[in-house]
Image 1 (cartoon, rainbow, N blue to C red):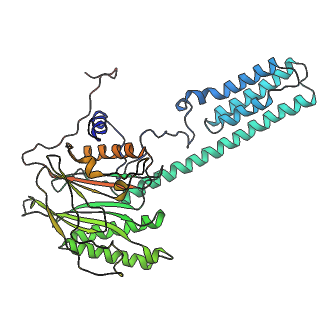
Image 2 (tube, rainbow, N blue to C red; image 1 turned 60 degrees about the vertical axis):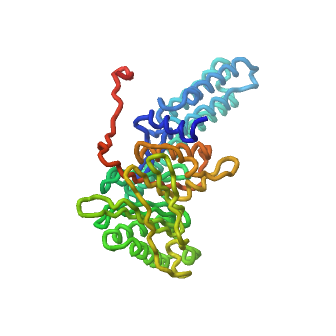
Image 3 (cartoon, rainbow, N blue to C red; image 1 turned 90 degrees about the horizontal axis):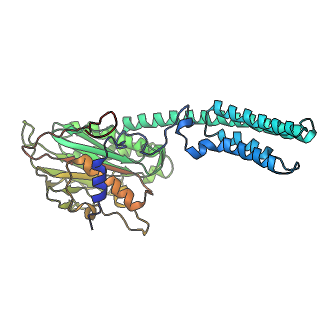
Length: 422
C-alpha cells in the first residue's frame, strides 16, 4: 500500500495550469463559470438541461394528441418557459415562451375549438406564465450580476488583506494557500503574512476567534501591526507584544461578547541572517501564542513539530495573565521546509470523526518545493474529509534551498495544435 499522500502528490504533479486558491486565488476548480450576469451560457449548460424545455413542449403536444379532448397539455406547455428562465438567456426564455403559446394555439386550432372559453383560458394561462418566466429571468440575471460583483469585491478584499507572498523571499522559497470551508467564501478569520526585514525573514500565521466581518477586521489589524512591527522591532518577542497591544486597542472598539472574548491564536517566526551578505544563521526562532505548532520537514522525510517549551495564551488575552514572550530556536538547515498552518488542517475530521494528523500523513514524503507540498496537502485533506471541511484553513510553507542547488524554474507543457504532446 502506498503512502496516504502518494496518489494526491502524483496526480498534482501531472496536472498543469491548476487554478490556485491560495492567497489571492479565485474560484475553485470545477465551479461553473457564469455568463451574462450570472445566467449560465446556453452552450455551457448540461445537455439534459438544454434539451429539457423543448422536450417538455414536445411531450405536451404528444400527450394532447394521444388523449381525449378533456385532457390538456397546457400545464406542460406553461412549465417549459419556467424551466428555461433560471438557466438560459432572456432571448432563449422568450423563444421558449413563444413556442409554448404557439403550440397551445395550434393544438386548439387542430381541434376546431380555439374560440371556446376553456381553450382561450388555457392559452391565456400559457401566455401569462411565459411573461412571468421573462420576469424571473430578469431577476435571476440581476441577482447574478450582483453576486458576480460581490465576488470580485471579495477577491480584491482578500488580495488587500491577504496579499499573495512572493515565490522567492529573502533567499527562501515560499508558498501559501487559503482554503475557505464555505463555498464562494474568499477570506475569513485565518491569516498569514511573510516579510523580508533587516532582521531576517519574519512571518506570522494566526486564527482570529469568530467569523464574519469582525473577524476580517481583526485580521487586518493583526497583519497591519505585523507589517509595521516586523520592520521596526529588533526582537521577535517585541513584535509579539506589538500585536498584543494592537489587538487590545481593537478590543476596546468592539461591542458585546467580542469585547471580552476576542482573541487570536498566532505563531510568529524569524529566520535570521548571520551577516550582511544574506546568508542565514541556520536556525529559526519561534514565538507561539496558543497556535498549532509548525512543522519542520527535513530533506530525508522526517517531520518534527516545533512544540512550545512553555504554553502561552493567545494574542488579545493579556488582561488574564502577563509574562514575557520567549522565542525558541530550532535548527533550520538547507533542504528543510517549515510548514505553518491553522487548526482547519489539524482539526479536519473524516466520516468516522478522526482528526487529520499532518505529522503522520507527511512523514516519509519528500517534495520538490513548498508549492508541491501544499498542493498535495490540500488534496489529502479533501480526501480525508470527503470534501466536507467545516473550518477555514491557512497554510504557509518556507523552504531553504540546499547549497549549490540550481534555481527553481516553472515550466509549461508544450502541446501541438492537435493537443498532443510532441
